[in-house]
Amino acid sequence: MHVQYSKPVAGLSAIQSQAFHELFGEYEGRLVHARYHRIGVRLHCQSIAHFGVWIEREGRPLETINDQTLVAFERHRSTCRCPGTSRNRTRQVLSCVRGFLRHLCERGVTPVEARPQPIRWVQGFLRWMRVDRGVVESTLTSYGSYVGDLVRVLGGDPRTYTARGLRDFVEQRCRHYRHNSSRMVVAAVRMFVRYLAVEGQCRPGLEHALTSPARWSHQSLPRGLSPEEVGRVLARCPSTPRGLRDRAVLLLLIRLGLRAGDVKRLRCSDLCFDTAAIQVSGKGGRAVRLPLPQDVGDAILDYLRAGRPSVDSAFVFLRSTAPFDPFALRPAGKAVGHIARAALKRADVHPPTRGAHVFRHTAACQLLRQGVSLEGIAEVLRHRSVETTGIYAKVDVALHGARGSHTSTPPCSGCSPARGSASPRRSTCNARM
Image 1 (tube, rainbow, N blue to C red):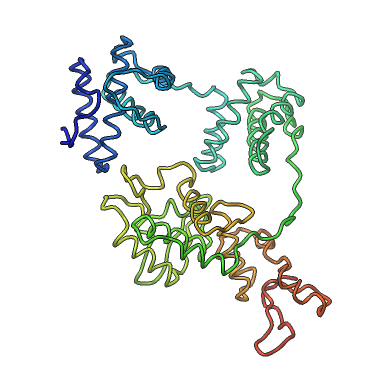
Image 2 (cartoon, rainbow, N blue to C red):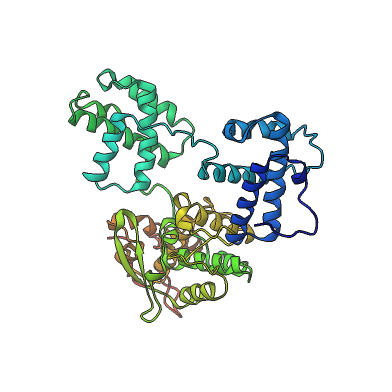
């Protein structure tokens, strides 16, 4: 299936291989069927044609093409002298060729590279964590990476593991990690060592050689945005299909305090506009039902009616350009995080952290300013313990600075003065319980 262009695809006529032309046509039809834009299809075709000209000049048969071939092609592009081919030098060219290579693997033209199998003890550990501990797949993926590296560094015989070896591995692995990532590495190694001890393959108690990085409870202030910043972030969303999607995502983050993973896993069946409710599946597969605010519901409806691609998918949020895959197929909420960072940049807002989680803090701070108790905030944010919500009971720095000379006790950020009165009203947020 070929698309008619105003100009022929550069370099395609120079390729002699009939097999390459057939595979090229198949892949072009696949892109069209996936509803890629005409310009995007042409970019793919020109990039693949350039790749085809190069492999013929190099004498590389299709059956021998692999990832190393792609690396060599990237080196070639800097000094390319292929006649009649596209001179595009952007990184998109490699992405287009990589998609074509995946097509060759699926068609059986090139062999699928064997992925390294997990080490036996790592396989048993992950099975134990999944079945006996009920750990979700996203956490298992991280744990498998960490303990797999541990076995490759320390060896496949757990009986030789020592406290110094474990500490050295953790120190080396966490050298450039932030606090939360370092804690996850330590937790994974500890659980792995405990599993080995249960199996009789490791000295009991060896996990005590590892200590988590120090972190004081509630050491930082809430990182929420001000109402003015929130208004600016929402106002800067364009009225395009992508803008409608981004606005709906942002309102879910701001009004309901959802996590990025909650948003990406949201299904159409989770929305009930008749009862103004939304069902959210959070950490550990716990599903809760929350009220759907009017502005959030309106934004989602606008997206579903005028912004969402006409694709048969159970998930609400999809990519705005082909292929129209759901966010749920993307790793660990990266699509939602990208939307959050782009929105903050458009609004010229510079919070301490630029990810989606800053809007979760914003939602909690908004609830606290409205006089909602910590128990109520914990219920909305789905915290298992109200102590986790305690960070929002901190002093409102701006409020305290304005009244510091008149009050002896710093007011809670949820305690605003009654109308017509200069003195703070009685707190109803249980911040000093």
